[in-house]
Image (cartoon, rainbow, N blue to C red; front, side, top):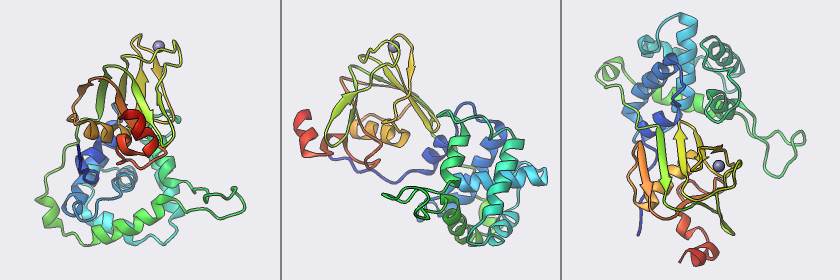
Length: 276
Ligand SMILES: [Zn+2]
């Protein structure tokens, strides 16, 4: 079976940013950001997370709801940023904490994890931290790209753009047998941390978090699992995404170390031979 995967859709990106515990002000910021990016999404799908944090910040600072922040205000904010918007990072952190969106710890389903991914320096590959400058925060490049997209919009277009709806962000995927994580040199089932059972469990996706729940109801976080890889595993298994789905037999998921669109069945000759 050949599966052609498209880029991440705007409703899927929204779902990724919306764990069930997300506060209403954050939901409103994501919705407004999605509306502003909808006209350009097909050509330039990007940076919904960064724009959501910027809208949240403007909402807190201006004491206005995210949906009523004018396009003009967003465009001015973006054009005021230099190439290293460190002050913007500080303001986002402060506003997020005020709004209760940030400061909730680093569990897999907290928005702090998303913010850290966006705002942290990344270690340069192969270089210990301290010896090389590393890669600047993803937020910096995102601000430049958002400036290009947002400054090209006019208010009339946005008024006519419906607010996009997120796709289901809370998924339960039951496996008939094992959830098998595939890397190039191994295929290993996810095992419950508490009772060591593997068979007949399910994966729970909640926004940016994914966990394994065994038949006894114990929850296990496994570092090999990642939400986009799980969504793509369903596409490769030919199972439409829905709030509750069942995969017969084994559910094959590509390990997060490999490309999120990789087909777990053809990741390497070695594992492909084992799965044949
Ligand atoms: Zn268990």
